[in-house]
Length: 313
Image (cartoon, rainbow, N blue to C red):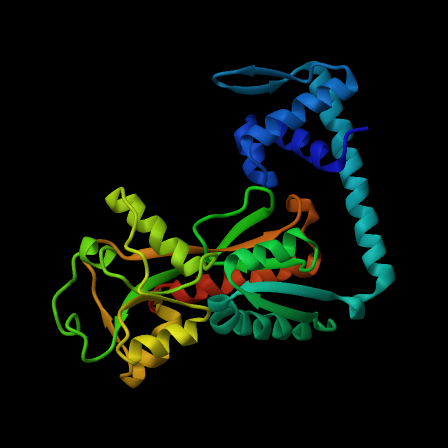
């Protein structure tokens, strides 16, 4: 009997007409999707698809099996809903792992909005436990089963987890008020790339996003950091103390910029934007109801912020 994830993938291929589209929808790589479909064909002893450069079409047997698979998945959905009802809404629990920018600047807003939404419709609010670390740590907590959901700010999204982008974040170059770059015109991007910066540790989404952007624009690595620190707060303090410049989330630097402890310096070229991504184990059907609801709130909050008349990042 094929596993539920393979049945979900099979149905998605029939619906989308392509393995790549089904892979994106179910949160796996195209290579993994192709391998799983061939495994299903071997398990069942049936040829389910006709593959060609123009797409993937189900055979007659494939259409029949996909129809049966859809019935199985619908039954599984009813079973999950029924067991949640037996547990009762008051048992809703969600453990969320988040990178530092998300846990400090975004998640509190999402949790307030989630609670308000649930109270307004008469539901018991979901109890949320937060685990904070860098993006690599957050992904590992989900992968190991210690968290139901993670939010990361890295350009590298794990291919073995379900994923969807919920927001975006801008990176900004910050310096102390007395730094030579303060008050100048835009600093050339390659000048910043050649500067040893105050940076976060390996595994930080901020550091990964900056280094990936340097490779994308310049085709080479950024300079090694002048100093590596474990938290965004430590980076801000080091920059304000004159230790050097840093590239960090505009959200993280906003308070220090407003108070005059840091200065934001423009860089030449387009802004550096990174995705904020939600992660969970399995495919789209494996996302828990509480996790799905929190993701919906995060996406709605982002849309509200950038709607006309409300400004952008």
